[in-house]
Every structure is written in C-alpha cells, then in structure tokens.
Length: 326
Ligand code: DGY
Image (cartoon, rainbow, N blue to C red; front, side):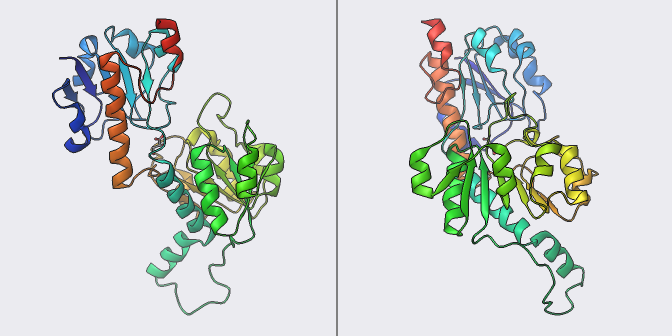
C-alpha cells in the first residue's frame, strides 16, 4: 500500500476515507514544521497531506523522489512551491468552495466587532469602567450606507459582498477581472485600487497571496484610506505590510483593523499590534467551524486518493502538470 505522510494529527473521522487505501504516518497536532519523524520517511512517501503552515519547497521535493501527490487542506496554497511541484510532475490539490461561507461569516463578524468597538467595550465592562449608560461612550461606525471596498472578488469576496448588502452597504471592488453580472446583482462598482481605498469606509481583503499581492497594502495605500476607515484582513497576513499597519493605527491614518491573518503567523504575544485598542486580532480562524473543517479534510482526502490512483485531482491548482505528463 502507498505511504502517506499526514503532517498533523486530525480527528480520525476526518480521514476515514483513507482507511484501507494507504499506510499513514501522522505528525503531531501542533506541528509548525514537518515533524522529524515524518521527515525521516520522505524518501518512501507516495503522498503528502499538508496544512497551510507547512512549506512544500524544492528541498522537500528533492528528498521525496516517489511523491505522486500533495494535498493541502486549505484553499490557499502559498505554502507550496507550485512551479517546483509542476516541474517534478506532482499535482497539488486544495479545498475550494467548502470554506467560502464560513470565512465570509468570520469576516463579517470581525468587521462588525471593529466597527462597534466590541473589544474595547468588553474590556471596559469587565474592568469596571461601565459607570453608566454613556451617550458618548464606545461610539462606532454605521454599516448601513457605508462603502465596503472588497479587494479580490473571488468566491469569498462575493460571499462577503452578499452579506454586506444585507447590512445596507454599498459595494466597491477591485479585481483584475471586472464582473458585469455581479455588478448588476450586487450593485457593485469596479474601481482601480487607489480609488477604492480613497472611497471606502471599510476595506476587506480577499486576494490570494502571490508575488503580485505581497504587501499590496503598505504605507502609501494606508495613507490613501480615510482616517475613519477600518481594514479587515481574512486573506493572508503578508498582503499587508505589518510595520506600516502598526504606524497607520498608532498615527490615525486609519481608524481600526480587524485581522484574522497576520505576518508573521502566529503573531508573538509581545507584538505591538496587540497593544493597540483599535486592532482586533484572531488566530486565523476564518474556516474554523466544525462542518467547514470536516468538509475541507474530506476534500483533501479525495484529492490525495485520486493522486495515489494516478487519477486527475478533483481540485487541482497546477493542472498544467497533466499537460506535460500526457
Ligand atoms: C485557507 O483554506 O486557505 C484558509 O486560510 C484556512 O482558514
């Protein structure tokens, strides 16, 4: 039976589809790199089941000559050197679709939390600073009638736009591909990035991390935003320049940020972003619902099994790998 390295311990039922089809070597639940006990078996591995925290690079591939499939339990694949996998003829799978709604829910949740200053209000209530009903206390921002700028109008961007429309927001978006049907459906307006930043009361990031989107939001972009604007990031940390964001929040270039993803990740406990009352940070939990995570694992198993059988992966991010093999 083929040998599969599973980089992290996961609930057994999530991996039930693999039973009887492969031998599995499983890493620790909290692995931050490929565990040494798995690394030792790279030379014999036919498949690799990874999470988004494990880099799959040329060095790893060089040590895994038998590898036939990499299955990432995530929609984002920025942890994987796709070009190197393609050169080696290794198809890479991801888990699109199943985390769209959950991630959009979390985006809305942290946007609302930042808009209504829930972090500060909760801290003040717990610390005894809730003296009376205060007409001027904890004043936040309205969603109704506000402009939401969505950067990256893929599946999650669209799901976020749907939610925002229900809150009475106007949708602006920036994406390499304008989408006229969507514009009619959501009354969304396609804009160049600069204009979107200038006009938005909230900016929500939904791009994949690529060489083009790395530090897409840095000092010039943050300075371009309204001083009352709120930045929301549930995409990937490095899409935002972290030091510039700290300055923007300290100096009032923007009003607040709500982050599900950071750079670095995890953000160390002494990081300046934690000391800012106008910055909400949660630990990359966009897809963290019971059903979503199970569905992601199931999709990752499907990709893995297809790869082991030599079949086309149902969710393949480097389909060019097949063209070169045929
Ligand atoms: C993904 O799948 O890329 C998400 O970031 C997981 O939450």
